Image 1 (cartoon, helix red, strand yellow):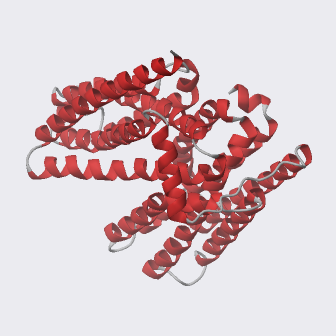
Image 2 (tube, one colour):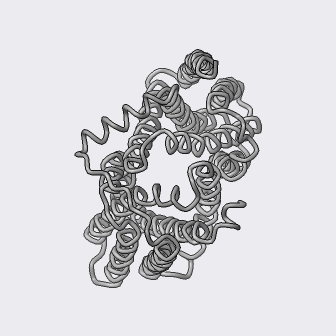
Image 3 (cartoon, rainbow, N blue to C red):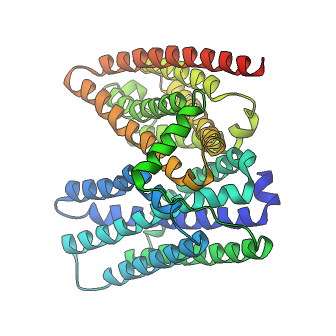
Length: 416
């Protein structure tokens, strides 16, 4: 929060990020609503979900391209302008005679191009934020930005559902376009300000090929004692958090005593609890637990995951809500700390590539573990899936504890 208030350029950068994020949520809800009215709505909704998740799997490539990019501020402005133009086109498509599947496929395609541009833009932003706030403040800065973004996402979902009552799909697409245009103007202003304040600053640009870059990233991450292990541990913890929610949904569906009002309201509450926890962890946890190591946070997360599995087996809705918030809080606190460790450990010119590699690992873990545990729940029994979560939490706890002891011993040896 202090960085946001004191650092003018970082404040503008953050506002630009929030603007584009809020617009995206509004339009995503509109597109899902339109697709849900089609005859084969399940296929349309699945296509939207797939195209939304695909860019997450190529973050290493987008990060690599970002590291090779000259004049990052100029490019990030042009990407915002391109996304503005794409959604203005989407707005026009919604008022034409095109309808049904033809319209949805065209909009999905344009939305996918916009998401790819957004992924590239995100890679460009990482080193720029480090330049604005410094390496030592990266965790607090990213935590605050991510935390408020989570809250904005929650609010935007409710606002979007309300706006759909009196605004057309075309108007919402144009609103989204205008958020990107506003963000682009803010980025342009920041770029001009930075060039004025630091006219002689040299921009670090990566000149290695893709595989050499990934190899360098991997090598530098491995050289930081425990960093690679903790990346894998955080990925597994994110996977556990992702898989717990659908398992709770399955248990609640078969146990009406767990309902808080209706089934849909209970599920919404659980999602909101996790989101609020993530927001609080990102915005507040990074400062409250500034001196708590990632290893300690990971140990607490594994214990919470194990307790969550036990609570679900005992069918306590209230305790589930409390633990979902706790897990979200710990995950929200861990991610910015992990990013700061990465920032300190790797060269600035391959930072976006390294962050992309890290985010790809984190992105893959969720779907893989969710598929594993929900498959067990669907083919055998949900209780066995929960026993699996319990056992997996114990394994991650032991691995984290062993690595933490080794890293602490290595640090003590270096000091001695």
